[in-house]
Amino acid sequence: LEAHKEITAVSLNKSSVTLKRAETVQLSVTVTPEDAKPGLIAWSNSHPEVASVTKDGLVTAIEPGTTVVSATVGGKTAFCAIKVAKEEGESDFIIDENGYITGTLSPKETDVVIPETVNGTAVVGIAASAFKGNNYIKTLTIPSNVTEICDSAFAGCGSLYEINFTTGLKTLGKGVFS
Image 1 (cartoon, rainbow, N blue to C red):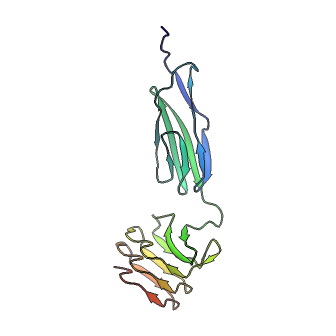
Image 2 (image 1 turned 90 degrees about the vertical axis):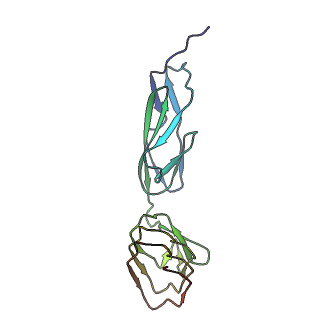
Image 3 (image 1 turned 180 degrees about the vertical axis):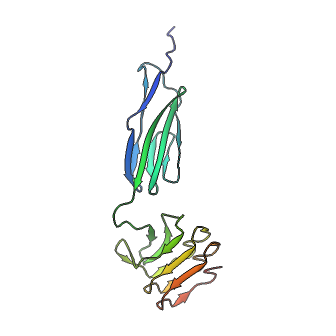
């Protein structure tokens, strides 16, 4: 009968990583001694809004910031610092093929300034329910090239108290700011 070897240390294949949004990195666990049986690995994450981690140690970057991913095995824990960096010129807004902003990658932004272009596409409108229920938005600035704000685009944005827009707006949907 073989004796059970106790884990004395745990390490990860990376101690720190910098990722861009939507990039992934696979973390793997090594236990000491090598012939100890690792058993179940418990993964955790200090800021899941910055990056997610699966039960298999796959980390996916979500939004700019920092988080610490940890793996615990046999009462021992190893850590990896994850930084998610915004690329230069990268927009926080999501835009569809028709030039309508459909949402944001930074939902906790308090002062929203809609840009004239997003990733080279001219912004012509705000899609239905694009920011619906976002209680972080306090001020909103909309440029003159935005001609339409669709139904319920900012509905339920209870903290929104200031809206600045110029003369380009032609169509305002139902319940836009309700």
